[in-house]
Image (cartoon, rainbow, N blue to C red):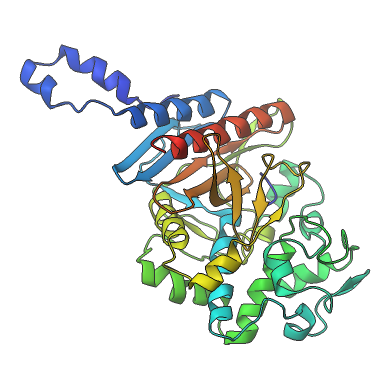
Length: 391
């Protein structure tokens, strides 16, 4: 969505083994270089102020995991192993995959306009569905305004607690967005807007007669065996185990438990899914390696436009259809998508061949811009190091 104490490390375990008997000590596995690197970067993200961090890296040589911080500020319990996560806007990649499968089946065309698909829905305040294509929706070149400002106009804890149980129908959210002028004529610029994917979800239902959530289950989750991934809609509670999420609404203010989502923008095709890092890695690896889309549709997904430098993305980032390409320090780039909401950030990324895939979850968010920037930098470094190692 719009937002963007240490766990015992493998190094400490290795040192502690010196006090064991020779037989026991020889049985303690030595941490790999990758394990040490991932744990070090997870601790750096914790040291930047994140309350709890979890990492899962899949490589041809095996799986590396790391946890740091705590899973709950009250109980101080550790971050759970492979806990359930809110996926936020990572939902968009699942939705785009379904749309492209429908394109491959000739049930949709990326050049169709929103007016053709949803007559009369996008209009008002200068918005014109006749000029916006399905491709524009999926790669944020539509210029359509954001609805978030209408459902959360006052960024405060009071608003979060007052309105977090309220849910909107997709048509209501689009209606709110249509009160505002477009950012630019369709196809002439780039601006991230959750409204685009609310409309994409509506289009899936219009074309198939089934909700976007049902289509994601049938076309993606079930074939890949992603049993721990779900489309819960307005159901607010995460399965256990999960870490608690914490949002700081004002600089130097308290960390507020926001584990219950803010349903006005956590319940639709733009950001409502839940799952685990294990499942998320499996999804992105399958997508990158061509297991979910035919070559033509995968090429269309990876047909990208530059992301402007003032949008919070790393320099050189490009956006395709539900998928970003971000440069790597070691050369080339990685495919992926992030997700965030009150108190959490999830980042899923894979090398372009799908052979190395990492998911990072951070379970708190700072209000102070400098602190938030430090945390974002630490998160980016973690992803970059995880994917570059072994290249």
